Structures are given as structure tokens and as C-alpha cells.
Length: 158
Image 1 (spheres, helix red, strand yellow):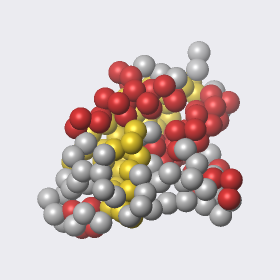
Image 2 (cartoon, one colour):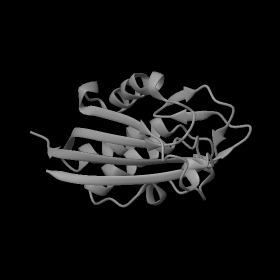
Image 3 (spheres, rainbow, N blue to C red):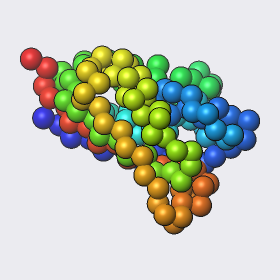
Image 4 (tube, helix red, strand yellow):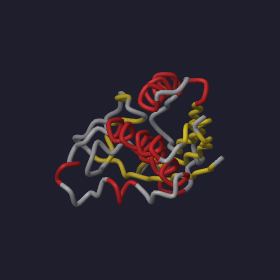
């Protein structure tokens, strides 16, 4: 078994779509980033890469490479899944916590879980996503951006 932890943060920006877990969220602001800025999927990728001891997403998909400008993070997650499989692992479970004051995410969580499970080619029951606020504290509490923690457990493929 291997355990990985991923963390990512993006600030809000105007004139951008808000994409979380591969799902477009109805909100007046998006997140700033080189790709689609899907902070949730970025944290998931870092957790999986970390569990495989393969570095982080900046190593594999650098923001200095124009090939990743506006890239779909879900497509990049599919590539990370293949790297995980090449290392001989499969996802046992994934637990994600999103920290933001707004928007409220409860109605999007099952869609995000479904999108991640499809990209990771695993059962949706292996994926948990929770959203919480920080009670007005810090940059997420002030509504300046979104932070995400992701933890995964990988098992050897049999």
C-alpha cells in the first residue's frame, strides 16, 4: 500500500469558468491558472503522484509549457492514472476536502465524484469529496480563492 497527500490552492479571477473535479460550477468567478485551474483535480493528481513517488504536477505538466495552456485537468488526471498503473498500483480510495466560503458545493459533489471515478476508471464508492468553510478566516475564508486537500491510498495491482 502507498499513501499520498496533495494540496493545491488557486485565487479567484474574473472572466474564467469555475471548474472543480471536472465539473463546471455556476459562479461569477473562476480560478486563476495556466490550465483550466481545476484546483480539486490538481490536488488529486498530486496525491496520486506523491503516493507513487513521481514528484508533482509541476514536474509532469509545467505551467511554462504552452501545451498545457487551458488544458483540461481531467485529461491530465487520466495521464496520471496511466502513470500510476505503469508503477503497478491501483486506487483503493480517495478522500478530498475543499475549503471555500463560496460557492456552496453540495449540489455538485456527486457529479464531481462521477467525473473523477470515470477518469480514474474506478468505482464512485472509492471517492469521497467534502466541502467546508473556514469560518471567515484566512484567504479562503475571505473569499479570495479555494484550497483543496486530497489523500489517496493505492494498492498493488493484482
